Image (cartoon, rainbow, N blue to C red):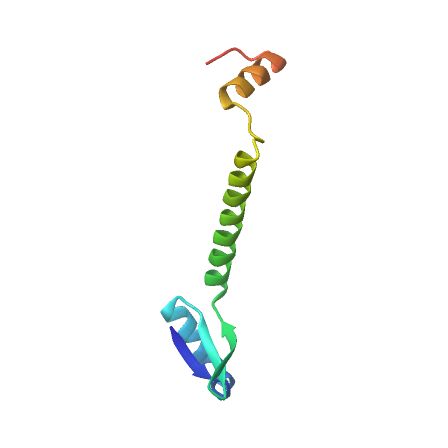
Length: 88
């Protein structure tokens, strides 16, 4: 984890290098307290993708616990019959 003081934000090239090399966020402090987080766009996109995937898994678990599920084999069978597709 990289930590830099607020005054170092003036050196954007160095902050960018820190983000790229560490492949993690850089924490920016002001008066010794955390104020900002700076991160590489690739790291941000991967993090957002993981959050989205976790959210979908949690929704699936919630649906399962609420009984909002259907039998996969039966559903495929009904779809094949509806569209005239023979079993493989």
